[in-house]
Image (cartoon, rainbow, N blue to C red; front, side):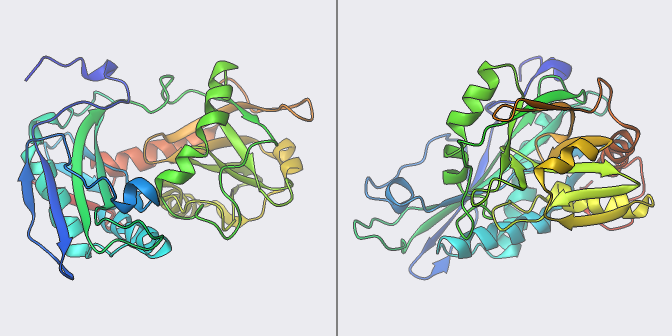
Length: 337
């Protein structure tokens, strides 16, 4: 194993030793298989290639000061993958297969779990694809579920430091009643052009408005949005938003810390009233927002160069639970000894 600068590894693909696979064929799921190959043999008419039958998850494992490895909210990710499967007519991965595959992938690649104090974690990517061939527009009869892992640093290179976001009204990430609430690749493909434009103009990400009226906050490309004001944690509600497990966890932590939680429609004008704002998700955890630029209206909403007090408290509490330094009173972690 190469010598790794754990504090500066960034967020990107890195080869590890093993991945875990499971096939759905002839109406049933098979046994877990371990592979050292990074390649997937796939039929040229597989539905994942033609009709977008693909869904994935992202979760992390953390090594605590006690040496134990903790996988955060494993079961919730399994349930969300099942929801995505229902949304695009793929075969559901049973939760026991999902859980066992992830634990096995982490255990087999245990030496790649970054040490405590490095700021890095083991990123876990479960993937479900339609492998059965179809040329008519209909679901496959065969599927591949697999899990691979890699060590990662912060999603945003700045780490837990406020960065700038931008609103473009001429881009949509997902439409109402579409696939926005499912973690499927098409939603991310739809965000690539706007995201590239934002990065070229010096922004971390795009803050999308609702596709129908362009009046309400939807979500950031790779994360959910939240705002803090008047001792309230406020996050948008929309059928186009992916239900972030990190956001769900932060809502519970906010309640535990004494904040009132509101999940509701958030008008774009309300951005001017927030004391703090941030993006949250598995990859980013929390990315505090320094300012939001409304490129179409020539407006700026400024929140400051330093993380807000509540954003910092939420971040530290969530990370403490993940690393085992704060009591996991909601039993979110799956602990590997």
